[in-house]
Length: 307
Image (cartoon, rainbow, N blue to C red; front, side):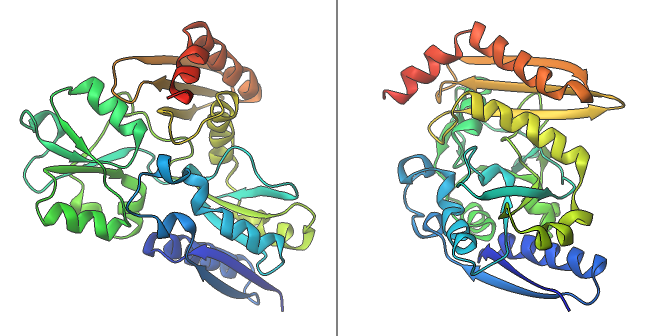
């Protein structure tokens, strides 16, 4: 009998993801024994501060990675949008599951869509990416920070702290809250976070036994899209201070990559896109990066990093 230990955060959504990986492993390897190791990460503990000021999305993964490095777990399960572009030496994202809907979701008890919000409506989001695009679209809105797990964020909406909140549709759907979605926001209106909707499995790069067990779970179409998107974050040295977004879409033999970088207040947004064959995905990514750079992405990022 094979055995595999999964390190995961203890939030409801993270545990859903870990259990989904467990289900898939058992489906493909009926004799496997799966242990789920729940952990509270630094990102879960610092809920009063913004992610940017607390240290970034990497706060959600570093304890899990340490668990792998110390051989206390065989794999760690992550939302790919939370995974920094730089990984510790000897670890790798080996497997990516088929992607759920990558779009942002508009959630409100009073209004059916963004366009219905009145002037000065209070909208909750913890994402500088979402805030940037929201402010560019509706400069009249009042944007307030929103932290906590999905249930906590929905409760704050229900308690009247916000007129609307913006969440990832994937998390809502996975937890059975699809009925709370008032509007799925078009990708051209709110470009998703890099890797949004995709689940990644991290392991030690020399653990061939675990990698063989994971192989049937890998979804190459999703992996190719996420690879293209993460190329943007790598080139721009993305962190939580920077409103950066990217989304790759495949149709037939082609892949189209859209990306943006902007000011948090939405006063300036640089956008670029490129299309090519899937075999030329790296070149497509490089073309998008070059276009962003031509528009002044480096200067914009440097100015934000100095603030």
